[in-house]
Image (cartoon, rainbow, N blue to C red; front, side, top):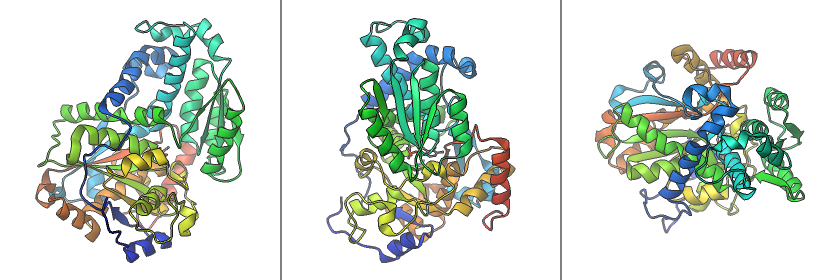
Length: 446
Ligand SMILES: *Cc1c(COP(=O)(O)O)cnc(C)c1O
């Protein structure tokens, strides 16, 4: 880390005023490992998905055609690129379509499903329901279900993590409870209840819901809490996406090296999903991948955490919340409405993340509408945060300074900009119509 913190007062003012901004991590990217994880851990997560694929195919008919693999396509987005006015001299726009992930309908299908599988696997091995190397479809047999039904899997969530954990836990026969924050959408609660999941509603924000869930499960000897603020299993489930993306880029003939930089734009809530994916991508592509988190202007918890880590937030506590800088954590991007970053993700990102930018809610809705109108893809507002990234990087002074400082200006024509769309598949049509009309009437819609 840099020795002398330099406070950029213009940036701090924009942050406090809730104006969109780009923050770049001071110092050049380091490859020194300060993370508790390695490539081997990422491979183990991928291997768990692979050996559980037949089980998942048996539990979820929608996975029959992929034989139990939960993955999303990598798609070119030329019409959206034109709409965003990103010139071809700055590279090409692609979308990693996690909004269309089966089972959970969001990026939570990665981390959330991985953690429930890991818990089920550990119970099954402990109770002799399956031996290592055997067919894991035994975990869907009556004997296993009877065992799992004695345990309760719980989670605190703004919505999407609850959907992933609740649906998979219930499908395996676990009792499942989801502690929801006040900002959770009604349709997400209804969908969970329809799957037999207990939904417990809490006043207050995501942090409260997690704390309440954690406390309740600690008192239950057969309870297992998926802890979004601390879990390694979630983090590594997300990280496994990097191995698959590596193969997809190769199949699409996209090179990633010094002359062909890859820029990845990831919507960030608590930081687990974008942090895990960034960790995976940096482990594979080293300095040739540039990862940026996207947060709502009123909920930039990861930005605040990073600025504090680099001494750039005067008088901030070590682990600040967005309330500490006078923001209100109010956003329609429910998947990103998190007041304080995960310490696990913050520790791993402090030496890896390239930057964070913020997005106004109006822009999120405009990008939902533009993506629908230009590319025919339907996403939720949280999932649209990535689309401001290429503009922040290529068309603002702060972004251009980053490109200059990394010696990238000459390579941009051969760059790939990858926007990670993180959720939307199960948004009800009437809800989506409301997103569209708000987006089309926004000043940011062109
Ligand atoms: C959860 C979520 C994110 C961010 O993941 P975190 O682990 O909370 O940072 C982004 N987009 C959507 C749609 C999500 O549901």
